[in-house]
Image 1 (cartoon, rainbow, N blue to C red):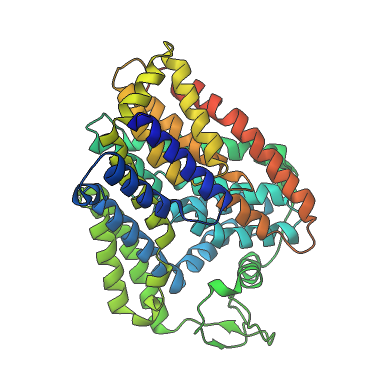
Image 2 (tube, rainbow, N blue to C red):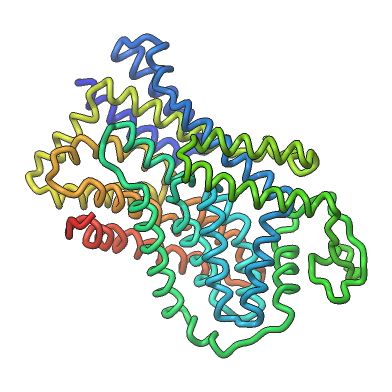
Length: 454
C-alpha cells in the first residue's frame, strides 16, 4: 500500500475514533504523525517535531489566556450589560444584541464554543421570559460566533490565514472574514423573519438591563466572579442579585473598575497593534494578558487553567500531522485526484461538502486544518478562484456548527430553559442543522466560487 493511501486511511480512522470516543483528535494526530513519519516514512523524530506549529501555539495560548482574564474580571458581563442598555425595552432587538455581542467576543480572539457557552444561557433565558423562539435565540448566538470567528485575530481566522500564507499562496484575510460575517448575518436575517422576529417589533419590556443581569445570574451563575461583594439596596442601580435573595446588587470595587477598563484598553491595543502594525498576534495577546495580571492579580486567578488546552492540542496535533502528510506526498496525491475529475467547479463543491458533513459531527478547526492544505495544490492550477474556494470552505465548515452533534449546537441544547420540551427542541435543532448541511455548501459555492469575483 502506498504511503499517501495509508496516510488517508490513518486520517479517516482518526476522525472516526474521535467521533465515536471522547478522545482528543489532536492527541490521535500526534500519534498518527509519529507512526506515519517514523514507522512508514522513516523520518527522524526531530523532523516530525519540526512540523509543530510553534507560532500558532503561541497565538492560541495568548488569545485564550487574555479572554479568560476578561471573563474572570467581569469585562464580558460589562460589555453585555452596556450593549443591552442601548436597546432599552425593545424586545425585537434582543436577538440582534445576542448575535452582535457573540460576534464581537469571537472576533477579538475567543473560541466559538467559549463565546456560545457565555451567551447561550443569557439568550435562552430571555427567550423563556419574553416568549421568543428558543431556536431563534440559540441559533442567533451560534451564527454570531461564526460571524466573528474569521477576523484576522480570531482563532479560525488565524488558522486559515496562517495555513494559506505559509504555503506562499494568495490569500485575503479581509475576504475570508467578510464572507463569513455577511453569510452568517444573512442567515440570521432569514431566521429572524421565519421564526417570528417580526411579531416582536411591538413587544416591550421594562427594566431591561436589570433583567439582563438576572438572566445572566440565573442561567449561568458559575460564570460570575466568585469574590464579588454584594451590598446596597439596588435603588437606581442594576446588577446581579444576591443568590440569597435579599435583593442586594453587586457593586464594583475600585480594583474591579480599573481591571475592566484596562481589559477594554488591552483588547483595543491588541487589535491596533496586531492589525495596524502587523505585530505577531500571539506575542501581543500574551503581553496584554500578563500586564492585566500584574494590574489585578485576582482577575487572573485560574485564568491559565481556562486556556483552551484541548483546542491547542487539537490544532497543533492536526497541523503536525498535516506536515507529515506533506512529506508522505498525500497533498499532491489528493489534489491530483481532485484535479483528475476534469471539472474544477465540481471539485470545489465536493471539497465544501466534505468540510460541511464532517464538521457537523467533528471539530471545525480540525477540518479547516486538514482540508485547506489538501486543497491548496489543486487551487494552484488557477482553474478556479483560490480565494473564493478558501472562503467557501471556511463558511461551509463552520456554519454547520448549529448541529446538535457539534459543541456549539450541544451548548444551545444544554442551556434550554427548564420548561422547554427538550425532545422537541432537539428535533428542531437537528432539522435546522440538516438543512444547513445540505444547503449551506452549495449556496456558499454559488456565491463565492462560481462567479469568480474574489
